[in-house]
Image (cartoon, rainbow, N blue to C red; front, side):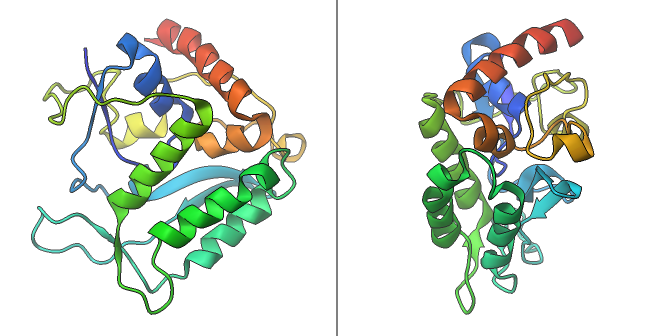
Length: 215
C-alpha cells in the first residue's frame, strides 16, 4: 500500500515513519499545488520556552488558478522565523552543529525583504531533502500520482492525520520538558536538535512499534 505524504517543512516524526519504514517506505507526494489552510503545509510545530509554538511561513493570497503552486509572502521577513528557531533551540546540544545549514536554507528558499515571492513547495522539499541527508534516509517516491483512497491510516492529506491523530508518540528528551511537559507531534527538528541524527533514526523505530499497535 502506498502512503500519501503532503509536502510540509521539516515534517513531524509520523511523516518520516511512513516515508522510511511503513511498507518499505512506499509513498507518493501530494501535488505541490495542493494547499489547505491552517495545516502543517506552511508551518511546523516546535517546543519553545513557553510551550508549543506554531512557526508559520505566510503565503500570498492564493491565485484563482488552482494549478499554480502557493507562493511564500515577501512581506514577512524570514529573519524573524529564524530568530524564533534560535530562541527555541539555541541551547540544544545539536543546534550549533546544524545552525549554518539551517540559516542557508532560510536564506536560499524564503523570500527576503524586497525579493520576489518564492514557491512554498521548493522550501518544503529542501527541508525534507536536508533532513533525509542528515539522517541518511534515501527517499524515493514510488509514484508521482497519489492514490485516491480515503481515510487510510497511511494517508496524511487530511488536517487531523497530518497533525498526528491516531498516533502515539514515544517520549524523548525535550529542551524545556521540565517546565512544559512533553509536547508530542513536533517537527522532526525538535528531536534532531536535542538527540542528533542517530538517535532520531532510533526514535522512528520506536514510533513504528507504537503506531503499529494503535491502528
